[in-house]
Image (cartoon, rainbow, N blue to C red; front, side):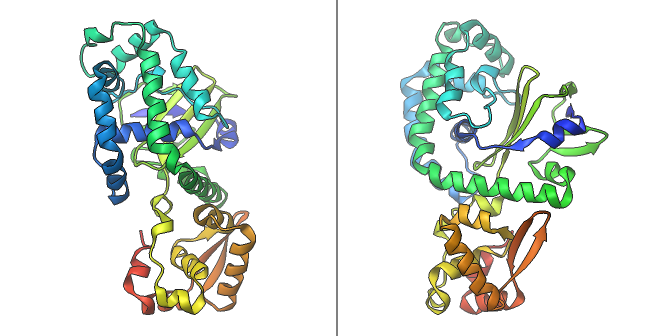
Amino acid sequence: MGLWQIDTDTLARSRFVLSPFAETFASLKLLHAGTGAHPGEDAWLRAHLPGYRALLADDPVTALIVRAGLGTSWIADFLCPTSCAGESFEGTVARVRAAGAEQARADLRVSSPGPLPAALERADPPERAAALLTYVWEETVRPYWERRRRVLEADMVARTAWVSQGGWAAVLDSLRPGTRWLGESRFQINRNAYPPREIAPGAELLFMPVTPRTGWVSWEDRERYAVVYPCLGVLAEDHGRRPVPAGLGALIGTARAGLLVLLGTPMSTTQLVAVTGQGLGSVGRHLRVLLDAGLLERRRAGRSVLYVRTAAGEVLLEASGPEAVTGTRR
């Protein structure tokens, strides 16, 4: 199994960060796989897979880079640098472009499932890889970025609340299949048979959510490490398209009914603002009305206050139609 040795100070300083590049690379992995993990991914693939495949058909060298770089157990290092906290997509992809040709070929030899094709013994794999990643960002991620960003921010808020409530062990266990806190400063990052790696004191440890159901780990020398993981399923859905029963909307207002539908899972005010796009004041007023009506209750998780439906709220939703309730369960 892959194992990182992490001292308690490094873990305490670790952060959840947003990475447009990680979201783009996760989307590239999804395009490469060609099969979605849920209907939302399937719909996205129907919209973007034909264009992606046409691009690779017209550029067989780039197609070989993708096939060799996205190996079964290793990703070519130059293809997926570890984003810095707050780094733009353009900033990270510039590092892909700046990779040396010799280093890129060496990385591809490591990740390739077989011998490196002779067609890749050339000087421009970094430039071609950067161009492909830019295409994926511009054509398949950026049009949805504002909504995805809100979902990812909501996930980070939820994970941070979990750290306050249950400590890092519970959060690390939940990131993705194969991650597990083993105790004694040992963090299992995956089930692959890699040599253990000791994270030096003072190194930066980052956790990056992405909306596709995928994940990986990466590092820059011994200075910065990242765990990329799929964000919470309940937050990864397109909440804007969740059905709000018309009768319930007419009774208590569409915005309040939408919050009630969402709150089958405990969420904070910040999360609700991120997911719904409503203003903080508006969300706060709607929550107060729902609380006063006995449809919600508050729970404290560390420093966060979470809201969740009460039994009365469940009964009201059930009376409005079964789809209103089943859409919130996981």
